Length: 233
Image (cartoon, rainbow, N blue to C red; front, side, top):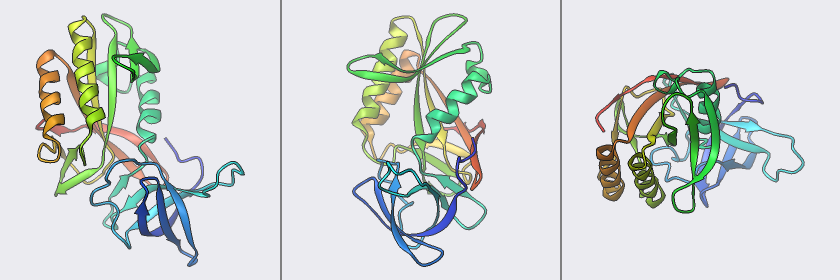
């Protein structure tokens, strides 16, 4: 998936109020950018980081830049836009680029299920319907290892319980971890950061929920689905 508008480099001044970031553009101007990431962004919000932002000229948008990438300046990138994974994965699912789900070509997004929830994707085709929850992974505290979550996520634990219930009703269920980093070759749960989520994940796996982990290919031009990643979860 290519970025609709070419990204421009900047330096991070600070990220605050979850969805705002003050940045310094290459011409020296300091502006506020939209940060499409409600998580803690552990390790990705230090002052002075090189980042890439997407400009826009939409008169309806108050903020004229959106933060898209962290540039680690060693050839690797992290995608920080949590709205991107679902858009990219829908295209990948419909193009049958995920072999584990290729037998379910019919894809619906944001379908009501569980208790006041919406599943990211409901896929149908051969056999039972498949409920798919997508998790964007950006945390890495150990070289080469991606982790989820980066903070306590009560919503994430609720999703795991709801996926488990779908399997008990005879459906298939998948939690899809999309690693938005290019510097990781493995994945695990950050059990110390949220033991409750880890317990919900383990219970869901025991109930038959499948976990898929894929990495991504990221450049300032765009983000595309990569390959399955080794998982210790």
